[in-house]
Amino acid sequence: MSSKIISVLICLFIFHLLAAGSVAGCKIEVYEIKNGDFSVKITNYGARIISVFLPDKNGKIDDVVLGYDSVKEYINETRYFGALLGRVVNRIGGAQFTLNGTLYKLVPNEGNNTIHGGPKGFSFVIWKVSEYVQDGPCPHITLTYHSTDGEEGFPGDVLVSVTYALKDPYKLSVEFKAKSLNKATPINLSHHPYWNLRGHNSGDVLSQVVQIYASHITPVDEQLIPTGEISPVKNTPYDFLKPRKVGSRIDEVQIGYDRNYVLDSNKKMKPVAIVYDKKSGRVMDIQATAPCVHFYTANWIINVKGGKGGFVYQPRSALSLETQGYPDAVNHPNFPSTIVNPRKTYAHSVLYTFSIKK
Image (cartoon, rainbow, N blue to C red; front, side, top):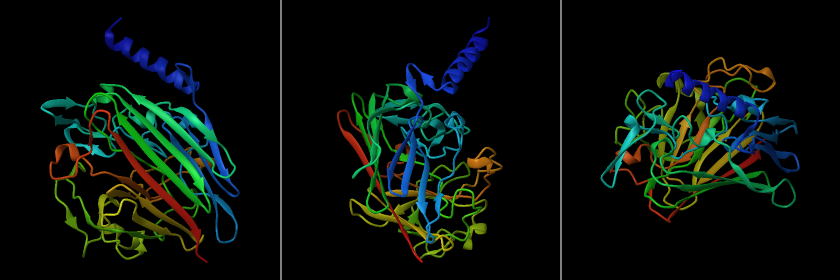
């Protein structure tokens, strides 16, 4: 039997174990944290947010993130619905970087580049639940993962954790932490909820109003790899410094928005963006400690069948605002570094505050 056939059989065996919900004794589960009529569901597969239920201005409860009905459908899907992204979010050009004189070659999973940590990044592993409080005064869940030296080509062992917590009134806190154990390594964590404040099955988000507190973006080449420039958004379709509808200039940016914004504030916890849907009255205010946010309008969500309730998702049916460090910083010395040295800790906090505007 050829080595290629053996490799295929091993991959199929692992996939069937995942589909059965268990790998090496770790079971894929769904956990809910709840505070009255505000609830969030998380799975330990990829530390993903799979639902966020909120009331609208009429008291109607809707799920405002895209996803699937079954956790099995998240296994190996390529759109990162609700997923935690790492070891390095966004793209790394050429799937390689040099650190302390050593060239590290990563596993490419988008052409010649690596995106969101590689084909088996943090979005596609089973996390351990270390703490879980479903309700009460502080509902929360903490998930952990040990990323080993050489995983997807990255150097060093890293201990990672994420805590999702509900806080009154209608606040979702996300705390990312990672400790480099033995080698310097890039760490840049984020997550990828696809938000539609009108409801996951309500169609496009073009009429929803967005404000992004950023005067600059990092331009990209034809492969969406940063060029190293930092350019102003003024007088361009990327200018969301004042609130405006997502669809007001989206047709001027090819298939839709897919850019990293450099946030203006130098405060530790800084304003990132506000999203408002007039029909439902829902408002989402985002603050974070990260220096950037990636704005994406679900451009590649094309005829995604098997969405919740059998709904078919289409382009522009949601938006993502992924707070993060500078993308591809490992290959751009002029960008702030994302390298974490041995025994040092990376931390990144995000706070979503939901409200109603009647």
